[in-house]
Image (cartoon, rainbow, N blue to C red; front, top):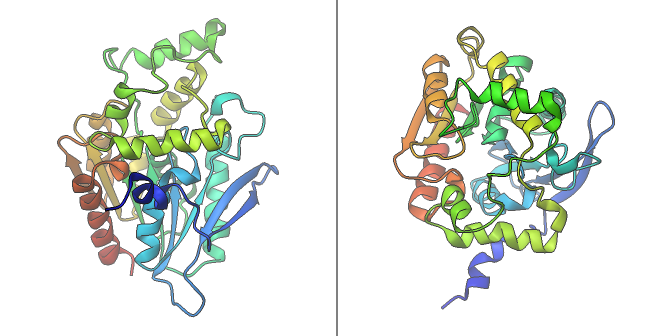
Length: 312
């Protein structure tokens, strides 16, 4: 019988044949990047780039990269500006404008696409899903398909009504609390585990294990300024007119009981995107790809089937 350390090993070990490097944004900001190509002599199925959520880092999704790599994809991942090993002098990853992240992602996609075989697909989780969809709207990158997983199209502010939340975030920023963290959000523990990985406490512990190896990976909870930026980005970008112009095939996976992002906003966006497919899990936690195997494997198989049909 395998010990827990053996079971967790693929999630806690960087692939020996993956290449870690620095990619320079247009303003010179260094972003850490991982490229995990197929072995020499093996023709790739295509190229896939993964955009993670707020507070995430490349290593958090090693298990998922392994799935796609085994399926024949060249896999690329990166740390967002302000996170992982792309932090720089941004405190807690708390940008007050998502604009630089969109510029980074648009330029990175262009460089990645120019140097990798097609088809080219992008997958974004949570904040990464927000930024991927906004990049589709603002930059129109030459992709063949996109997948949004529990995308943060609007922050779930319950019990505060969504009509009041942007105003509160703006007011708190205006009165000098822009850089103050949201005190109500837990940093670690059973409540956070249930909200993120649901039926998989062992995958939740992978994140804290990596925090132990790389303490700076734990950037803590968001600030009021970051929350204001998230609301402003969503309001300006995810409008009916703009979403209707996104002609790319998009698969959206979401969960009915998500505590972090708004399922209502996801449903509205799915109805407006011309080529969107939506699947909603009734009881999954926010990090669908890090859930227990019944949910996680179902999600991966849905993504595989979607890409087989839409990215050839």
